[in-house]
Length: 204
Image (tube, rainbow, N blue to C red):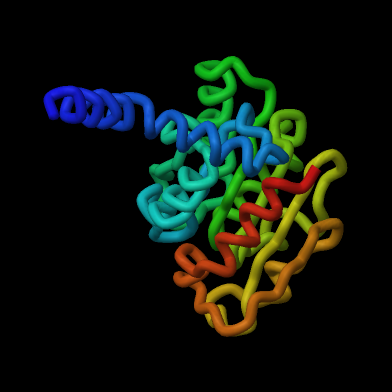
């Protein structure tokens, strides 16, 4: 009986100590087409904040990302000012590149964050440091009329948005994906949208 208890305790200690790491490793292997070496920068819209991406961050962690891989910016100017925010985004990404010793990041942007991202890409040299961009109800055409060469761009939008016009979200050179029945804010939490985000990150 004592031997059984000791064996049980040994297994329990192993699970508590190593089980989480093992699960993360298995998840990463199951989604091996994702490049986990590229951190993700999360870019909010007008009046938003980094915490808007809580649900998306949870989804990303479930497929193998670590908390340290996810970096949500909080703009000093929350009015969506494209000039100021794109420059703050540039500085924020430069810090991520330096601190994590990487050459590129991926970006997930919501609403006006899409326009800020495109201005960073097209006017502030961001194209050299970004592999993939995924926008959710992005006001993309306020930042550029087309996607610059060298960036894999996915624009997810909905006819139920009612905040950002679909004509602003659709942009030349992107994989434009319409998801019906999802409001502007629910683009941040909708399960179908989150599955599309993972698919875009998996794309080689």
